[in-house]
Figure 1 (tube, one colour):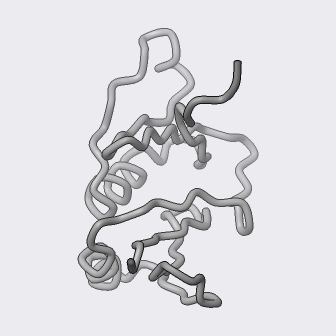
Figure 2 (figure 1 turned 90 degrees about the horizontal axis):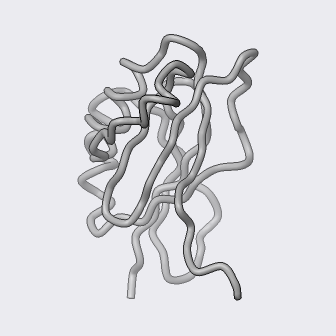
Figure 3 (figure 1 turned 45 degrees about the vertical axis):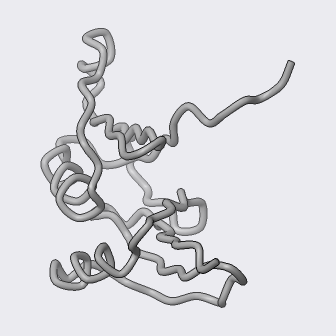
Length: 121
């Protein structure tokens, strides 16, 4: 018996910011929205999926953005996403090199840190 996979990653956002979450995660990162179960819709937030990644963005009050803890999303063409983010005026930061990867850091509209990666070999 043991862990076999990650089911989803949970991030948080302020109350009422679902449109901004959709614009960022769908429009800029390429996720698709998944309907939340009816029993959880009253909580607000939104669920997204892309490839094998399931992302749940839930409402947290009071909200404090995650500046250190973060998801790291792996892309097959990171530059396309970086270009979309740059054109939208999103935060883009470099960090120390990590062997075998190209990587950037960004923030969602709420200030949560997100790592964007692509394997180089």
